Image 1 (cartoon, helix red, strand yellow):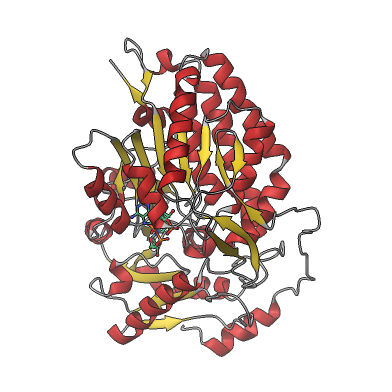
Image 2: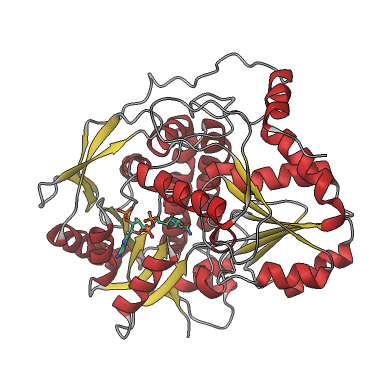
Length: 490
Ligand code: NDP
């Protein structure tokens, strides 16, 4: 039985009304202006240029941030190079101590960091508070543990750091991506120059304060803000020995081309178009929660989002009915409200990209479903959306939308599920929902995806490696594997 928009509105009325529960922001001190974090202190940019960073939920400017030019990036790389000489020689247990200290300070300042992350990026506070910040602290804690055990991690090899790492991160998980990059690099004895995304630099600025609070030796971590040009200066700087990038496949390829032949090490964590596959024997209510978490978590701004739902034909109807019912209970609005499930889209540019792809889905013949949902007047918003009647050739089934948009396809046999799931240029993640353990293993062996979740989705742990196949990039972050790209082994 199909569920109509009117029925969904009726259902929405039946759910509890929640009183507003906004997180307080009066204890947050965002500076009106930020410089660059170079050589252990905040310094003004040589470029003398700034750019605003806004709150995507209100479109209000939060702060002005420095835009690093060639001279600034060179200073940062030189500071990192100088610091490398002593950081690499420091006793590993002392290095570990700094990382433990950073982890502890992230925990202590977690409430502040969660609010800053939510205001700068638009994600719901319950996600920044319960996922982004605790996982960031956990990454530093975990890699602190490895700093003095590298010889045990790689027995009979002689692990040595590479030098200065140039790291460029995206806007979807700003602090968490910073932690994924900085923690293993430092544990392995490297120093870093990191460029946060243009739309979300603020948590990295708080992190710079944390480095000072932890008394991290000057130059071990340097943070240069700016746009794509600054990122390109970081990765192509001749004294940068290792490049780590997370972002779009397009820019990943550009970087790969720009550093080809230089001998720099490179790891790329790029886009995805993951299949979330539900078999007829799956526990449907649990699967519905997994589908919602897979695609609507962080407004779908997740590289490993379960953006293609593959559902076995025999259960498509009841599953979709449950899913539509669940969508009507999602709360979209003020990201600082603790009840909010869907926050703001990160930027106007990203909103326009989502809108364009959704229009293409309608034009190509897919059937759109959106629950009744009032969008705030200011800010960038997009309602939770699902498409049925999707063909594999449609753009919405092929391209990374990076928004709260799910494309639903069906299959009849496990082989067909495998064929359809792997029919993508990407290969970052996949989800399998079934009651049978043997089927989970059978599917996991056949998925061309770096991570396969079974009866869950979007579950992260610092001990577990993460990374892709094909156009989703190469190299692994997390776990012992995450140390490898930062070490010379001989
Ligand atoms: P980008 O790949 O452009 O951004 C990622 C990071 O790279 C940002 O810090 C960006 O700076 C920087 N950058 C941009 N150009 C260069 C360059 N030539 N050299 C070095 N660094 C560069 O992603 P977008 O923000 O433009 O998002 C576009 C699409 O990418 C999204 O719609 C989504 O599909 C996908 N994406 C995927 C992510 C993932 O985790 N897989 C993450 C983010 C986006 P700046 O922010 O200043 O532009």
